[in-house]
Length: 325
Image (cartoon, rainbow, N blue to C red; front, side):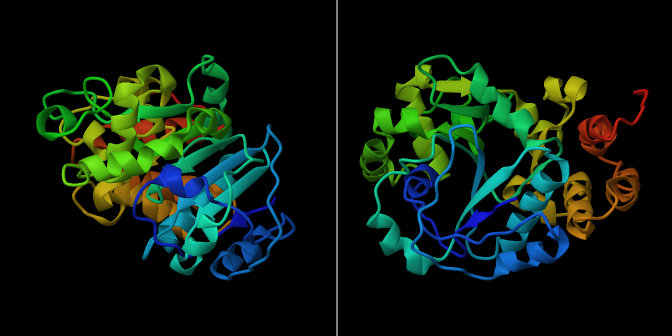
């Protein structure tokens, strides 16, 4: 398995704008010894060789700024644990490389990517998310989940001072991007003008810019369900993500620091389980069983009351028989 990485880069403006400039720096990890090779992610290997992807390749991209290194490693680990397909990773980091990015053209050899925030974890194979590309219609160029399900607690509909997608906005933490269509749309030509126009009104940075673009071009966006970007807001007051209740959480997103907070122990418990698991270990004994224990001890809250939604897809992956209570 090959990891194409660019390590330690601070990104300020827009995930989409930056990802278009990924080229030429990589760290290669093979499948011979994942446990040892995973540690090599902390090393830099700089080369001028271009990265070529086939149109059918699964490419996962993440922006790892500042102290997000360990979150990034856990996200990559979660992807490797469950996926059976070859995965390619593009990791944006390292502030000193920004100038070299700006000298490059668009990613002409990459058709599509799955962008992930660092504070996300796969609870299902990556290909379950990637498969939504095949559901795009001829005009759609990206996929996102709604920012909220309940208008009573929605942020955009109550506080936003700029245009946003639909009635409640979208969250950019898990984003499928068809770069071929986005290049044809001239995406990067929209980003800077929008930033300049709304820079004093945007609160959530790149996510607000993305919302503004799709407000004016809603036909370009595919919406998948909240189970593909499951956040504390989906359960902290009451359970509002119904697809997760029936099909399980596919991607958990510990937004606003919830992976490291005791406010919702369930999110902290899931993160801790991935953090402690060593690649190459027994997923049932060394990951699933500890996760069950951690979740049992984190039940006395609204998210904990529906703890099985975080286990459903992992059980399916391991073909565990389970009768829902």
